[in-house]
Length: 237
Ligand SMILES: CCCCCCCC/C=C\CCCCCCCC(=O)SCCNC(=O)CCNC(=O)[C@H](O)C(C)(C)COP(=O)(O)OP(=O)(O)OC[C@H]1O[C@@H](n2cnc3c(N)ncnc32)[C@H](O)[C@@H]1OP(=O)(O)O
Image (cartoon, rainbow, N blue to C red; front, side):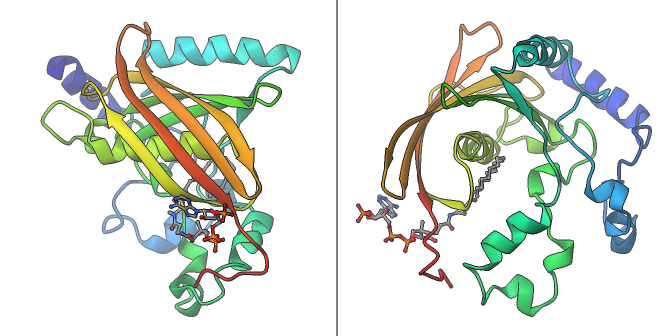
């Protein structure tokens, strides 16, 4: 596994900069203004295949794109930054946040999309609106290592949070996340996160998910989450 990961890493580095519009990874090599300067970078949809995607990930992606053809499933686009409207929605609740007072708001971006192709979080989410569930295809790259050769549990928790969040809509926050890590996830492998909305109770959304290998034989994790729809009457800061 480590050998294939190293080979993958070599090919990832060989492909550096080839994807159109892809910013370089390190801030010290690339001045911040260049990372955030063009509309093209800001609005790029990152939930699409790139050369770092493994065969498994591409195959599953193609299968789900087929399911999208009759409209029962949709691929969720993924941007480094939230749309102006979404940002405004959240700003309403966090008027005193440091981001706004320190003028850093313009530089804010989703941290899962801050890595160079293949090194961090490669993922795409498909949503079935009628069934209130999503499927997240996730390949965790070499920069997400915890125990040598294995994916860091925090990286897995991040993806679980995002996967569960994708079953919600509008302005919500994670109030509780409960994860059982059952088997370690090999670094650079592909996992499938099946999430569903179990119950809606007022502003509370109860969700659950499981994380499995592509062949479905290995159950890596199971999790539940409680998300709360933000109350416009309350400010959280
Ligand atoms: C953001 C998602 C957007 C989705 C967009 C869709 C696109 C899909 C694509 C991509 C998905 C990306 C997804 C990203 C995901 C990232 C999410 C995060 O990282 S969030 C950061 C970590 N979370 C916090 O920092 C919260 C901190 N906590 C709070 O701010 C508050 O506690 C909050 C807002 C959660 C609730 O506060 P209150 O004042 O509005 O509500 P109160 O009255 O306290 O609670 C309401 C009800 O919920 C229960 N409740 C609240 N917290 C609970 C808890 N921890 N456990 C159990 N019950 C709880 C309460 O008991 C109450 O229940 P009763 O109505 O009385 O029955």
